[in-house]
Length: 353
Ligand SMILES: Nc1nc2c(ncn2[C@@H]2O[C@H](COP(=O)(O)OP(=O)(O)OP(=O)(O)O)[C@@H](O)[C@H]2O)c(=O)[nH]1
Ligand SMILES: [Zn+2]
Image (cartoon, rainbow, N blue to C red; front, side):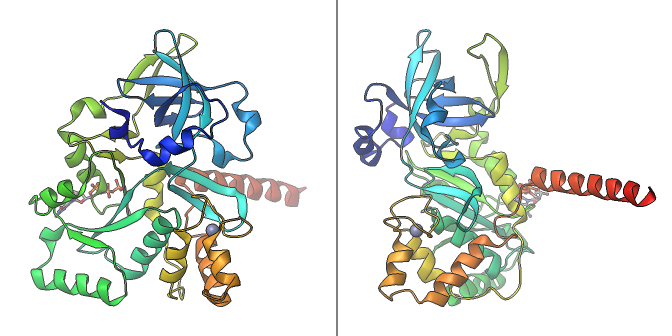
């Protein structure tokens, strides 16, 4: 396999000479498990760890490798173990964030070309929710495609009305109705997925993402297996692969963090136009731009020369920062609930005293 088939195109080749360490080889992160990584190169998938000085050279958590990232590595033990020295710039970056506060950001995946936003035809279809997922994708420079799942549950008329309402809302993304049950649309979906490009599935719980993933990965049993290897310290470890190369050569990313996005909430009254701002964000120099202070921020540029009205900018930033937009992960919520429970307990004790 050629490394270009894993997505290492001219864009990354050009960035190679800007890396701190000029020797080394490019490899792609295929799973992250706390401080240990799986990387994929042209021949194999192996375990990797960060170089000792990696942490000294970064400014924030956002500079830590995440799934989909390209990294510069050096191989040891006959190429069975690697050390990560450097992170390539990101072409695209899916993250949860609260506007302007870097500590409230959480990386989800890097270098995704297309996000399939899944909404099921029967109950889950909702224009406002769709708009929010589209903003999230565009803000990370990821191309959104709408999959209308469970097509088998609606009539052709109902389906046409849904597609019409998406178009009437001014949303211009590709729309593909599919059914995992009847296989309708599955061939079209596979035809959309190109060799060397990376995809992910976003959508609420129950819309059929897992079923679809299994359909796409299913014929590729080897890829779904866990990777068991000895790590650098000789321990036996197991990691679930999060970036999978499908039979057709396209790649699919599925991380636990991506699953948790499924509960994306729906506040009221934020049905303002976002398309202009979200499309501008696509042109920011940095994939992880916060649109607050960065040089090369397309939103700030448009704001200063009047192409983007201030209130539009502000409502867009508000949308990005909403608590329920980039929902806290389930684990974080559980922890918050626990902390709150503890707080109540202590407070009660103190009252008793
Ligand atoms: N009728 C119909 N049902 C489907 C289809 N695809 C999935 N389902 C059903 O929808 C339910 C939810 O599917 P999942 O694949 O688990 O949905 P999910 O989006 O992965 O949900 P989470 O795992 O909770 O995130 C299951 O009962 C599936 O059998 C479809 O194309 N048609
Ligand atoms: Zn920006």
